[in-house]
Image (cartoon, rainbow, N blue to C red; front, side):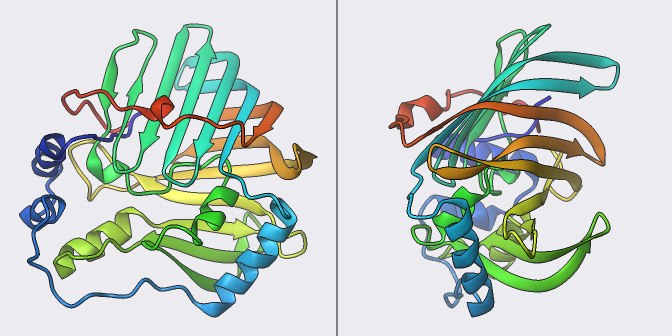
Length: 285
């Protein structure tokens, strides 16, 4: 299921940079070098910000969501492997998330924490995610947290790409990406590309219908593997609007589906829940 990678220490960051083929300049950046060109500004166009404000009014109203926990039933498909069970999805801001699946063949887990993350399968062995798979915002199962993050994350940009078509439906298309300061131009461009996500909104109800982004093999950041998250069945719970139907597609094939059974907002989820073990890089889940 989960195969994308993350890391916690400078040494592991450096190791992953070489494994994934990122330029040495990125390593220098992460180590604190000042060798960079003129500062670029994060792009946030006014039309996108106006639309986001309206969407958040629908999704969260007056509630500032610091953390969210979804309990659900789930179905998992990977080729001939078809399993069912329950899931816990936890997000804290736009940089931390936990997806825990309790399935027929055992437990599967994926944790994101800033520019690091890990996954484990039924054997319980954790594997660090590759750096290049850790730039997209973490709470893919509840994108309202990404919208809210514009107020607190100075690296997050958004552009309004206007009316579009998605799955035969008229939608509003916004594109998000991160601009990390103090880097060489080529590295800045690379991170913006790796962190890009596209969110498609219902133009009438203003809630997200889908979120698209790419993952990559652990040893090849240039090979894009498309992921799409689809949202439906929006309903009020714990003072906010939540999609009770969530589906995850990998290269157009449904791999995960969730039916939410319980929603908990602002329970005080501790940062320690997203602790990343110090391990060797283990794949591209």
